[in-house]
Amino acid sequence: MTTKLNSMRLLEKHNIPYEMTEFPDSERDAETIADILGVPAFMVYKTLVVQPVETGKKPLLAIIAADRQLDLKKLAAVAGYKKVSMAAHKDAEALTGLKVGGISALALTQKNWPVYLDRPATELQHILVSAGQRGMDLRVPTLGFIQVVGAKIADITMDIP
Image (tube, rainbow, N blue to C red):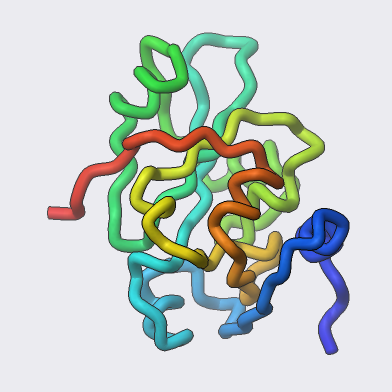
């Protein structure tokens, strides 16, 4: 039995059912993780830390499917910024206190960062998101996840060429 993470406690507090899935914690690529778990890549969502180029603004979390690519221009427009950029791995880890591959909106709700979930997620009953620790994903009802993390739904991706 693994330790209960804050992400799990948060879901339980809101009576949102979840299923924990585990995979080797050396894996960080969402598409590879989907293969390991035997689920389609469009169900596994990765959490990206994005920084507004304007100083003094809170980072944003962009949550997108493993088989999609973040469109920074679309995200900036939706979030009301001129420009945003991906946080470097070391910056993402410093900002969140979580390791890349284990960054989870569920583990960061206390930071009150804006969370943007890519629109295709709303077509799925469940999505898999990081539990806040490498090697663990949670299968959660999409609507419950949106409510708990306060996600805004937006078109923020493009197909991977």
